[in-house]
Amino acid sequence: MMARGKYLLIFFLTATILILTLFSSARIPTEMIRDNLVASAEYLAEEPYHFRWVIPGVEGSRLDLYADSMLLDIALYLDAEKPVESTMWAHYYWETGKRINASFLKAVTENPAPNREYVRYWHGSLIFVMPMLLIWNIQEIFVFHATVLMSLLLALVFLLFRHHFKAEAICFCIAMIMVDVFFVPFCLEYYWMFFLMLLTTILTACLTLKGKTDKLPIVFLVVGIAAAFLDFFTTETLTVLIPLLLSLRIQEKQGMRAPWKKVFLCGMLWGIGYVGMWSLKWGMASLIFGENMMQYVTGSIQEHLGSIDKIPGIQVIWQGLLRNIL
Image (cartoon, rainbow, N blue to C red):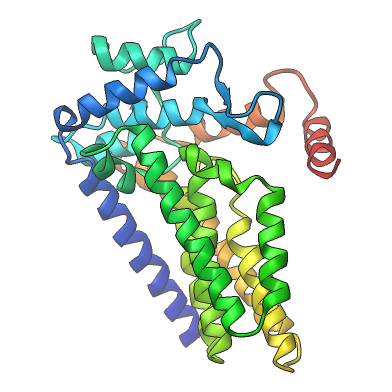
């Protein structure tokens, strides 16, 4: 009972800190970041598609301009006078029949009223993006992200080599190369889960090496919350699978038995944190605005499962599995 109370306290404390930080980031006046938003919009609108290939013909180098344009479009319409309402609604402008990157350019140069919402996501990465827009445009943010990601990668590899886990360090590097990690920093959408995964993996490895695995359930609860807060429909499971697998490997080489009970607890708490943080957004929005926000959420779920496009949901799931395996 005491453990449950502790986890509940940590959940609400973590969520409160993140939410208040998000509301605070919305207090940054739009005029202070407009120049960098314009420069970012011009860069994103250069492409006639929603994607940009860094290396033509190499699928792993494809960057998603759709999500990046939408996130900055939302940043444009945050209201410093109404930080809670504007953050929760996450309004943006998208002209019918146009690409989102072209619409974002029009939004930042012509100032039309927003005509859409993205209430179902937290868009928590704005706590970092908004302050960075004070000094950098999106291309300069990409350079900063590349520096951070490379530093974290090197720090993890150094940690593993220092503690004689050379094979594990090499395997991790090969895995990162296979998923084209060098392109990740150059897309806001891709970056956050890799950033969180590397931070979590370093922390998890340090705790495991010091024999403090009793702290891991709390770590994964917090990480699950942060994943739901920062993610924009990408690869959240990286933040739980890679750190847990490395922790198991370290414990195995230290001669310890695989702590499957603790592994299950860590995974379960990560899931509770993730689902709980998502649900908290919908619940808070419903209370603040006095209407049921599930109507916006269920519409999106139906669209992604194919019911709106008249494609059977099971077919969409099956095709998704095949594409991720083959």
